[in-house]
Each structure stands twice: as structure tokens, then as C-alpha cells.
Amino acid sequence: MADDPLTPGELDLAALGAYAVQDGFLLDLIMLADEGISTSVGLLINGMIVLGAISSPSLAAGEVDAERRRIAGMSRRPEGMSDDEWAEAQEEFATANTTAFQRTEAERARLEREVAIEAELADQPINPAGVRPQLARDMIAYRARPFLTLREVQIVAPGNRGIANLAVVRVTVAQISAWWVIRHDEAGRASFPLFEGEPGRPQAGPGPIG
Image (cartoon, rainbow, N blue to C red; front, side, top):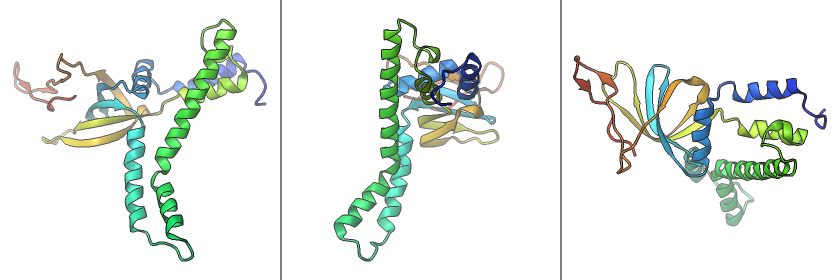
């Protein structure tokens, strides 16, 4: 039942389900991006190298809503609907994902506050076992991050000499075979060779990121 305390077995299963494909170090970078602190990373995905800066999912929501706004602009006003009602309906349609993301983030913030308060009252570390059962379930679900959002993306694919440049990309964390942090210089820029050409002669990779 929803109000029954979580058993150790339930906690283990819930954690496995939420974090089975989530690297704790990568999760830390994703959570930093939630606070506006972006980190550039390289990802190996299905043989492709994907470079970009981990960013807030709001960017992806904005990309989808931009397309929804284009669709709304092409639509005709239904008969019987006033201009004001139609404008309001169009705006609601065009901002659906951004609105949903804002609700999710507000709920996440509320949940984190509740968890912190309960942990402080109980004088315990913040963990699912130290809070109310339903709060523990919500905490596990909201902290799982099956996707990450990248901006300023460069993709290098096997057999292709060129580089694909994209503004925003969503990546399924489960598809990542390997990842690494791209270190920046004092000017906030970074570049590195991707592959070796002739022995001792590195072949240039994508341009600076930052």
C-alpha cells in the first residue's frame, strides 16, 4: 500500500529501477546543470562521439515549443471562437512543454525541501529510508535522470569527415557507452584531438567548445 513503510527490499528495487543506468558522477553534473552550472562533456554513443555542454532540460522544452508555436501559427481559428480565445489557446499550445517543465521543477524543489526538513528533524542524512514512505517514493522517482540535455553540440560519426553541429540535443543516458569531462582553459575554451593520424601526428578534432 502507498502508506506502508518501504521495506529494505523495496528500497533496493526502487533504487535499482531509478539508477540502474545512471552514473552517480554524471548525475552530479546533470544536477549542477539544474542550478545553471554547465559542464562540457564528451560522450561515446553507438560509435559516435558527441560533444556538448550539459544544460537544463528547459532548452529542450523550448525547442519543442518553438515547433509547436510554428504549428499554432499555421492553424486556422475554429468557428465560434473569438480572437482573444484563439490567441489564448494558441499560446497555451505553444508553451505546453515549457509549462510542464516548470511544474516539474517546482514539484522537484518542493520535494527536496520536504526531504531536507524531515531529515533535519530526524537528525539523519538525506536518504529514502529516513523520510515518510510516500515522500521516499517520490524522492527516488524525481532524482532519477534517464535523459540529459546538451547545447552547442558537435557530433563525429564513423566514416564521416565532417562534423554535425546542433544547438540542442537530448541524449538517453542508457545509450552512453563512455563519457568524459572536457577541461577548459582560463579563457573558458577547450579543444582536443579526437583521433591519431600518422604516428606522433594527432589529427585535429572539433573546434573549441565553450
